[in-house]
Image 1: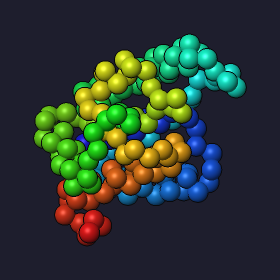
Image 2: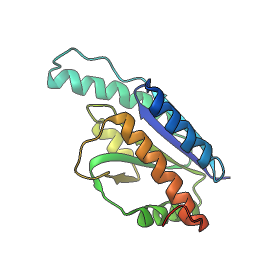
Image 3: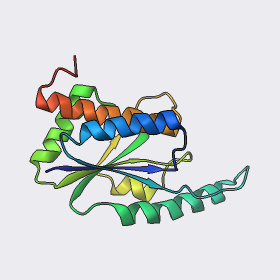
Image 4: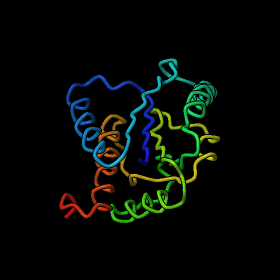
Length: 160
């Protein structure tokens, strides 16, 4: 069975986000093995200097790169990435499945983004559009789109 991993920087504490994430994780379980992995964000000073931010992103990069599943296609969510419709995203995921990869791994970075070397390691850069979203809401949006992509591939009526 295909495996999908979502790596999210930062711990989600709000009950409504946790409930929504659990619901989509449960739904995804009908299509694939799904894992949500939360990694801690690096603590930074109140008003961090650019050097502090870069050092924090590099520490996070070590964590992220060490957790990537073997032989998984790796996609990062980043503002400079490509925007896709839900149908195009479903096709991209289907193409990955047909490529011989054992799984796909998606990354939502921390509030300061992610280190350039993580972006460089990615097989694909995806954007959620030009708007800015809270990271916990972005997590739910990604989970919903993963479920929608699987539903589209299965021909279910979820996607209209």
